[in-house]
Length: 147
Image (tube, rainbow, N blue to C red):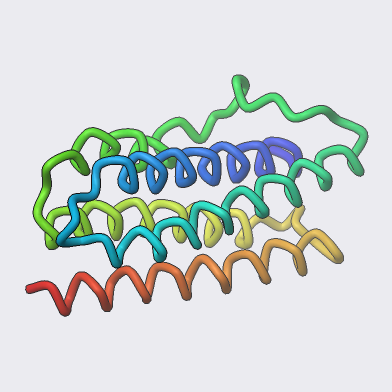
């Protein structure tokens, strides 16, 4: 797939994560208002990640074009769950958020397994993956508490 393709897939799933958390925040009812801060934090995180990844694509002499992404199914989890957030109870909302977090976590894992990802780029992706994993664990812990 090449470095640029990998980066574009990660940009796309980060953008989908932003859209997913933003959608969740629009639909959250008052009883789950505490989740807004958590979801906003991770939406902002993915905005930052997408910008960092776009800069890496630029350093490689390419332009970001997520239309050519072959990851398709990787980010579908976030797209699919956007509709579930509306009207869901706390556990359902967090179940779906965790499913989205599983998808982005897997995307970073797959990217870091690619032999073309080396040097400074590997450091960037490793740092982002660590933050994604922490986000996943936070969402999972909140979900577990909601049972």
